[in-house]
Length: 407
Image 1: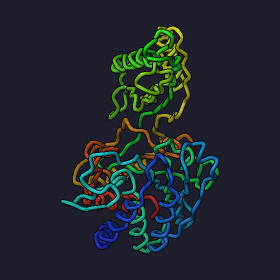
Image 2: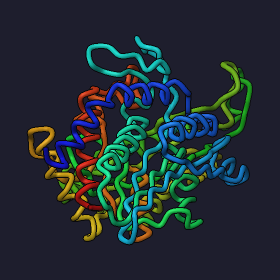
Image 3: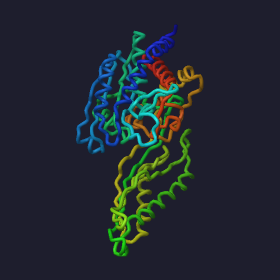
Image 4: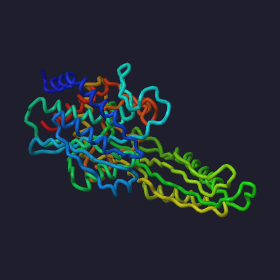
């Protein structure tokens, strides 16, 4: 039996345990917002320690967490040092968007039906807590001489930009890997991704009684003009195509609107939050400046309207670094063997924490247990789910890749 086959056999033999581990992680909510995620880190550390993976807990100072819009964060590191050589980091995030409506399964149940596990973060990305942990355990079961080390990084603010998750770990030199694999999907190796700019726009008018509306300034009317101008940008964006396979064109989404005080009152304030996805070829500074100008020009069409714009998030695009080739080649080779089909290397319209590592000069890719597409996973929708066979096979691919890189 080859070493690869021994890895596969160990993962098969321990797969029920791996599924129970994932169920236990799903059963501790990490809705972000509000972002009270330290309790999940405590539970994850307890489970990891029980498997022999000694876990460091790194609570982030409360002032930094609250400034990021969250409540509590404890980031986790499991360090496995085997000797001189390169360190491979494996990073998955435990924070998730709230479940929302429409579920037919308990979003915190980890229920299994027809070979799929259901729950918020089943596919993105508590699943890769288990993928990475069990791949490391499989690797160590071989008891081979290894060179280098592994840092398992389990962080809790990907939904809010990563700055107090992996960004904080990197800034404080708590992890200094040579290569990185971050949570992703099983059927492609992601080497590039979009950037994301999020702005909060507050439109100010003047409140008035609805019986005498001319005594006020309608903030909603001003907001509508601004929104129409912003949505018109999406037509222009379709003419700007990325050269990165898997990425199409820029786009803009307004995801949240709030304003007004009552039905019989001219609204004096309307706030909305927008999300602008940037292709790797775009300059974030120019993108933000253009959006601010579009908003200002539209606001000027309604006399008496003023606008405040606050940047909430700037996540730069992931640009592939040349040093990522050992990761790409190993994951593609073993993915093809385990999944029985070619595994492409391409870009994705999502944005991830990987960009923070690449900005620090650490080559990284996105690969994990998720399904073929975001749509298939139901990520950020009701009944998020993961095919357990994808979890099994992705764990084998990661374990084989670690063997190639460290043996």
